[in-house]
Length: 254
Image 1: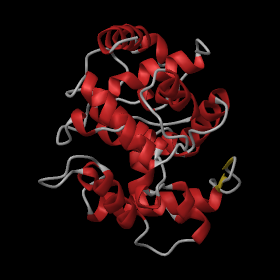
Image 2 (image 1 turned 180 degrees about the vertical axis):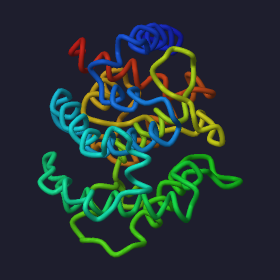
Image 3 (image 1 turned 30 degrees about the horizontal axis):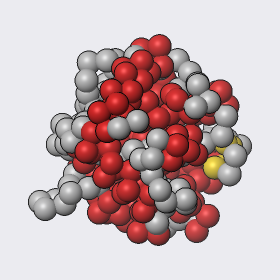
């Protein structure tokens, strides 16, 4: 395909998968259960954090997690008692366990108490052309309290060349708003043009087949390479193509 044909193909696939039908089978269904901003962003952040493995298992465990938080994640994070935390013991999703979860609740409480919530921590500074530095700043704040070394692996670091798939997916959920009913668009201070594609095995393999990505490793350098190509196709909303690449890989086995 030439550039024009590729853009038409990807735009068609993005429209196909960026629809309410996509929600039910995706982890984004968890924050869609809520209507208040802080509930949506906390439910979204925790659900994105455990979004690896089988999608049905992710959704099941994220649902269980919301139940443990009284289906009121913002209130739980900000107002829990020590007794409330006891019920979190035993939660596990793959390598994310209750020790990690307890720190996540502790850190989120710190963020909402002293930093006015998650949104401001991801805001870009003048002159920044991507969210790489914002991701690094967020990670520094997130781990400023005492924590187990094992917990650090659950918040990826672009400066260690991680693709940061789950963080980029969470940011897509919070920032994009196109009236299609999937992404929330509740964060207004970040331009969708700065978002990076949540790179996983599916999106990366499809991107390589479409010659949007040459790098073999699925790391931050690959994210930047793919970002550069997607921004040529749509400089305003490049991450809409995540729907196309993911849909082609997962649903069509492209």
